[in-house]
Image (cartoon, rainbow, N blue to C red; front, side, top):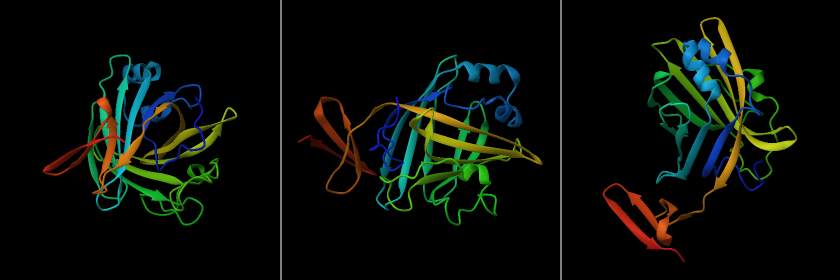
Length: 226
């Protein structure tokens, strides 16, 4: 379904599904990333569902964990995005070893590419003006480097109108040497999740039996919902 107005990048908590009808074909991008023909065909037919958990840590940094499951025999993966531009390694059964950097960005002013210089114009076009978004948090930028395969990928996340409806969209540009490939991916929301904070300001998410858990290193609190 379309994303309701209250759903913003500052709260992506819930379940999402990648929509083929709202997206560009991924084959050119995957080919440039060195993915073989058979895997590309399996990916093109698979349905990918994402469970997104978003929270601010004790330093106020936004963290996004994405638990992905897919049909077609593709192994599920968990991605971690830490929006302070620190390097986070990730090992993927499809894409191999990568290093990711993520941050909030303002594409309307002086957004810079992860590789230096200005963002590619295509990455900055076609977005909705989000009145509900917090200032400076209208878009998320991801920069991915796969040194072994020799490619980089730059992603911009936001909301755009696709087929007359508001949807979460990710635009990504892959480069390898002088070659480049790009695609946008429309993502439909399935359901949202309620979230709260405990008195220590650590993120807590609703779990079964109407309890809330607040976790930190070496300490876990369990709170009754009220």
